[in-house]
Image (tube, rainbow, N blue to C red):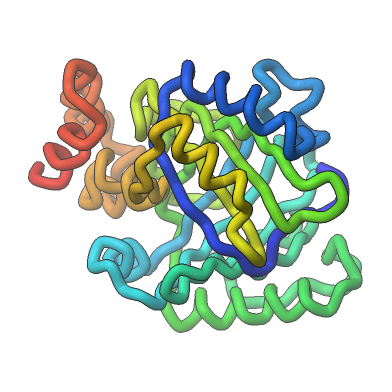
Length: 283
């Protein structure tokens, strides 16, 4: 994927929008931002993003979001492709009140299993010499150990990203086709077998900034009548799939259970996203 453009700390506002609104917003933001290089040659200007979310067996991290805890975090492995030599990024995403902070450390794929087992990678397996990435990996291992965290869900989407021309202080992302499926292993493949569409035909718009809220953000929100809302991909996806199904130990080895999970979901296309989530949560 090239150079790491991670915003270590930022403010973040989310909105659910239609494809038509997204295309109009694309025209609007071109006067302020430049397209992220990774999407410039991709269909619909969007590159694939894949994340493997980890959680405790009783889903403590999921519950912290459901409960609206002010200080919470998520653990995930982010990857972008299947090439054996493509890096995998171990990420800790924290929310403290309205501020988002991220730590991440990139490693070679063949170091993933040992890190999840609690072993720190050697210098040869870390993709950057930046000491912050080494620290992020150490913190990740400690949190995995404390939670006894395990792989839970694979989240994938297509991301269109716009950013400041001279720095990364302002960033806008539009995420299309957000999908979720149970994933109890760390195989880290981009293939998905039985994913559900978390937001249906809708997209997730995120306005991100590190310092002052840009004046033109206010204009964008006003022009497109945007209403801020929650759009937690892991939590909404896990709720839609059904949390008991995510932690079913024999899920992939039990075809009958597999059909029971997904056949009802495939019959819910007439429901709104929120109705589907609420229905799954009650099942």
